[in-house]
Amino acid sequence: MANNLPLTLRAYRAISALATPLAGTIIRRRLKQGKEDSARIGERRGNSSDARPAGPLVWIHGASVGEILAAAGLIERLRAVNVRILLTSGTVTSAAVAAKRFHPDVIHQYVPLDAPRFVDKFLDHWRPNLALFIESDFWPNLILSSAQRRIPLVLINGRMSQRSFPRWRRLHGTIAAILDSFDLCLTQSDVDGNRFSALGGRNVLPVGNLKLDVQPPLADPVKFDHLKAVTERRLVMVAASTHPGEEEIVLDAHRRLEGHFPSLLSIIVPRHPKRGAAIARTLAASGMRVALRSRDQMPTDDIHFYVADTMGEMGLFYRLAPVVFMGGSMVDHGGQNPIEAVKLGASILHGPHVFNFADVYEALDAAGGAARVDSDEDFVRQLRHLLANPVARERALGAAESVVYRMSGALNKTLTALEPYLLQLRLEQDSANA
Image 1 (cartoon, rainbow, N blue to C red):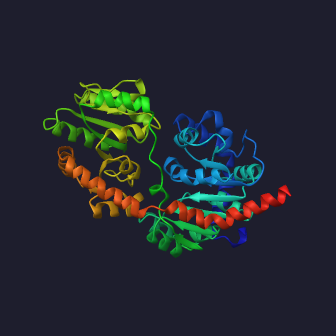
Image 2: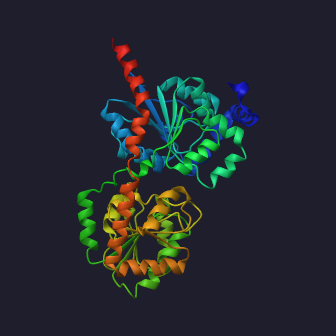
Image 3: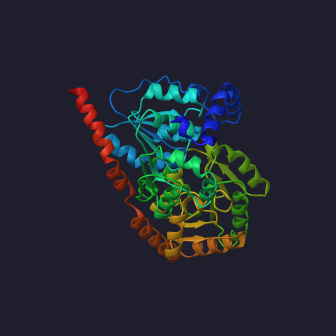
């Protein structure tokens, strides 16, 4: 197989093997940045303290929080038919979400660094019978070594953004060799499917976006009742999953609108909770009164901004707010998933940079289920309109819910496409038990 690889991949495999001794330096730097879990560093080298469970094992890999949450419904359906799951991801936040979101029998591991030695240790230990890669996290050694061991590989919820597609086209031989390792490519849309096919993907089948079938996040009822009681006399807006630069836009809008809406409470939920204290300092320096959720503070009547810098509580804040601004969209990040907010009754505002969810936002905008804002002025205008008009909010929500309903169904289609692989696992298990 190695001899058939393009020069780029042969060079990558050789360089990554030679660079293996640098792993310690890389990991130490990431530890200082808070990007690694010191108690689980061994997993980055392919070592694990967890035993492989007996019987067939399905390995599901996603880059971070969004990807593994997209697979939540699939994981639950597989568990319901007694399939054991190994879930890998690459971020500390995704590990925390996995521990909180999934049943304890779903084994989470950090994905190994993409060096041949670490990948081989990982595959030797876990010996997965089927591998499902979510969206587009293509680690060459991980994929090529899995294919070399004849582990069936399926891409699920495949996505190829407008930005990534031309980049990969310039490396057509490289991406074609990687995609050739996949037996099946299940994509989010026809556009994604056409892009994967053009890049060399085999058996490409558009089935829809799994993120539209995800159940909305739960909320602790006691915590929700407490927050609801504290904020019930307030008009609430949430800025969800914000990135640097967006909090200043929300701050400007709040200052300009508080004369129109004296009871306005702006809740900021930063994409990276560790930024919470710095965001609070910026807001306070501008004269705003701020409360931090990580310090167990509450948004009492005198508070202008509530910085929700905790993990796994988005369900609380979506339930509180009639209007939600989806972050990562006023800066060049690509946007965040709006579906959960829609399912919990919010009207959606977003910026122009939503290429990570282009088809979803395009459908929502066309139906009037979301409003795109292209400037700070536009953001203030649209936010004021929604805050002041309950009828407009209800109309937008109804349109958004119709779009979500129309575009859902990817989970069942994905399971149908996976059924031949799952049937093979059951036959192997029955043969082993005979």
